[in-house]
Image: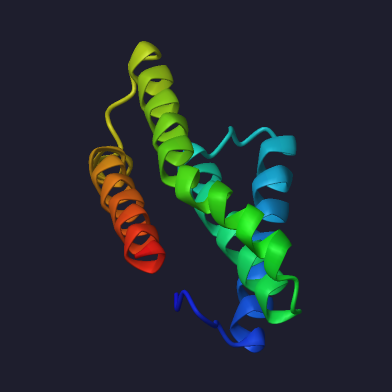
Length: 127
């Protein structure tokens, strides 16, 4: 996503996809199919990005800046959700979902790089 300006159409599309995924997650869980930890972790990354881009597209720069702080933490929250799902599955004797395991290992590294890039970008702007 472009940091300076995501097109409004793409921001609305991301918000719509997030809403549909949230709805399907809730419906599947209500039907008794179990809680999908992978989808919920994905939503923890997707929702803050979609809301930040929507706020920025609508001209709410201060609110988008506050949402940007949540975007920086979302990979770590998603990692915690993925690990919770993996550990609960292992305690039930289920085998590991390899996509979830790979994401749980790669997301903290991506989040650390994202935070480092944000911090170095702030320092460069201050100078």
